[in-house]
Image (cartoon, rainbow, N blue to C red; front, side, top):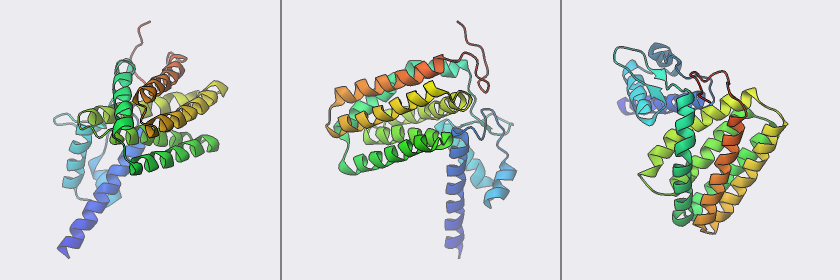
Length: 234
């Protein structure tokens, strides 16, 4: 019975983790939002210790900010976050994508193609949250395909803010240009899959670099989106 209770608690903790990740990536929980341990414990049928443990784990992954004697909060974002992302993302994404072309196996490729199908369906459905989630999953899958323990943690941290920046801009600016760029992004995903499958690392790297440029161009269209504090200097 004790083993069953322990397993049930582990399952609930896993569900809580998945739910919080989804809420953070899709901005249901805004940057800086307080994570009420008591409310989360009650919602997911957990005691406080496993919730606190999860907060520490998620802080290490970049989802949560922890400070002494203060409640856990969703990690903050600012214009400096955006600047840092745009500087570092090409280095990490290109590295992981090139390594994925070299190191992937057949199962990796099957998972990536399946995720791309879901991403394309989210565009067809006009479902912004799913689009954010499956784009996140697509690039995370590529990071896992690289099979490199040094690059993956950096990619995971970048992907958190990639998803949140995307959600801020796409929910506010859903015009024809954004829709066109999403179709371009989906096409680039297809091309990346082809390059990875062909083990063409240089082409895969060039494609993801161009892919990030589409994202950067979309973001640059809008100077002061709500939801991102701080000032942008020139």
